[in-house]
Structure formats: structure tokens, C-alpha cells
Image (spheres, rainbow, N blue to C red):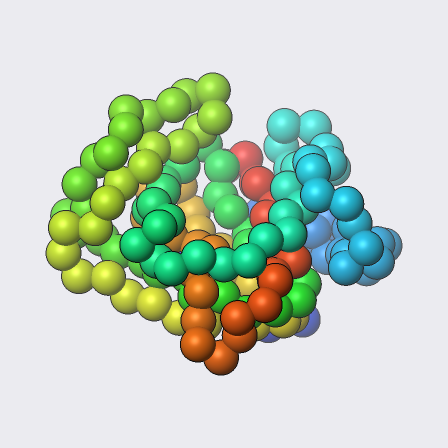
Length: 150
């Protein structure tokens, strides 16, 4: 897992980081409609989301096996949580077509606030529970989730 300002993405060995930064620089991200855009076919695409974060208990932990998530908050703030696989209990089987499996916490959970202009990277098999509300920001969030095939 990586957490930093989007301006620092090049500091890390994140695959497709140049293409991600080019996409961000080439678009008015706050005006993009919700949906999905292919950037480099199945190797790199982005999901654009607008929502109001929910209480952590209303969200599920997830893992992926094929894609890493580069979650970039365009506006707003949310809490993202992480946990070790040993601290989670499966809720679903792995869905190969959607590349996800859902879990519920059964042990220690860590969290951090991701605000406007910041990103977090979750590699395959790194459990994460994004989109959780935080006290400092109760409004909507605009987020781009870049899916990078690993």
C-alpha cells in the first residue's frame, strides 16, 4: 500500500504511473461523468465515481488478484481502511470476472484519511475498505480509481 499526494506518484514504482498522470493532466477531472474509461485497454482503465462516503460498517473490505487500485481523490475526503488477510473473514468467493472478493473485519483494522489531491495504491491481495466517512468532511467525494493490470 502507498499513500501520498498525487504530485508524488512518480516517486514510486507504480506501473502505468506516467499514463495515469497524463490522463489526470489531460482532463478536468472534477467534471468527468461517472463511468469507466479505457486508457490502455484491459491493462489500464479508470472508474470515475461521485458519492457520499458511508460509515465503515456499511462498506466491505475487498481484494483483487489481477489489478492494483490507484485511488485518487479529486475532491472531498474519505477514510480508507486496511487490514491483514488474517484479520478478515470472507463474505464471498472470489469473482474472477469482476476481479474481487469481499471480506468482513475479524481483527485489527488500520485507517487513514485521503483528501483532495491525494492517492492510495492497493496492490493485488492487499485488503482495503475505501469510501468510509470521516468527521472532518461530510460531503460528496469525487474519485478516480485507476485499475492497473499486474
